[in-house]
Length: 161
Image 1 (tube, rainbow, N blue to C red):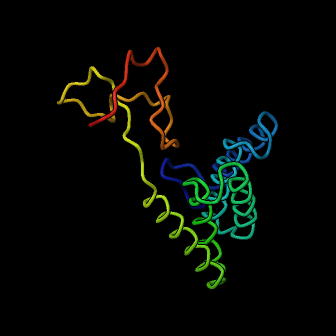
Image 2: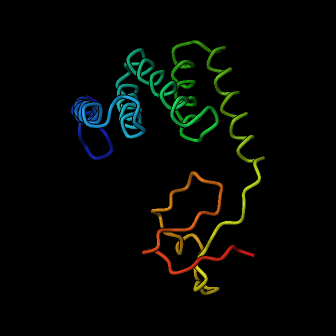
């Protein structure tokens, strides 16, 4: 039996992923982003076992769920589309895999072409500090707007010049 990096069998790992997915479905619903993430992790596990048909079905569900929740060009949606493309390619569906990969590339290019406003950083940051370390992780990374951090995280913010 093949093993994961930490020495556990893929079978045990996949069983744990299935339990995690069941818990997420019950507590959050099938279309919740955390449930979709758990579904994609299970698909990865199944792929590692060579169970490509089962992995593909889950990946297709994730792609559809993320398209509804995040939109077509969101990084999480594109990640799921890319994984589905790899699975399709491994199954010999090369044309469909190529089309999906083109969607991923197009979506990534669109992301890169979108102008991003100046990020907010605390006004108390010193030149030696990294702006990335100074910004609170609670703010999230999906927004392209300069939104203020939670009041408890930072006293004030100023745009980077």
